[in-house]
Length: 332
Image (cartoon, rainbow, N blue to C red):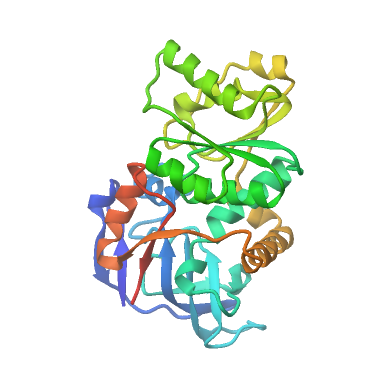
């Protein structure tokens, strides 16, 4: 079978497609014939040895997959050959087949295409955990979403609206603003490209404050980091929750005096660790996401698909912040 491999530390240009042995299902595992693997920001980090986990080389990036079960290993119950599934695998998904621990599997309901299903788990899983468990979202809240036109950002817009919030979507272009509006954003803010000087940072804080309103943002959902974080924090409400989700623009240096002045919290959102530590609660979240999907309240947006041979292009596009919605690699 074919696999996209990282054989040396570096960017997407270092990845190669090679033939590797087919996997065999071990105890407690199934072999999934992969239909699609969605691209996420950790894929750009892990190949540069910049992610929390550093797998031994050669390895395949790709953290969320969908497909059909091809074989079932010893001790596995509740799953059968032919079942349609999705799974969060950390890495290893950019290949045609993969042995997956059965406990990581979720059933894909009928009526949902496997390519679309591959775009659900990491983005919407992160966001439902972030908004509900870490953000304590409630109806009537105002939510400011940074990076609102990417996969995680759009999930933030859609889920916040599904929970009855008013949503301000912050993006970098008019095109992305239109995408966020179509996803349900009530208002949009277009920010400039960092780095910012003090005047630009102050202007952006003013734009955020004007959009979220005089009471401030109850939740800031920060997927971007860098110079964008402080202006967003300055727009937060009294006792607001600033959720740290990612930092493709860099790790922000936050003035902690603002947390005192606003009596607000800065909270991390690490969905992967949460899913591992609280599998039952995470499974309940995923079931809720499928219910929201079937009810028409969320709809994961797959904007582009790539064959395995061009998977490095998808990672590069995401890394360069050119992606709108989710980029997905298909194994057809």
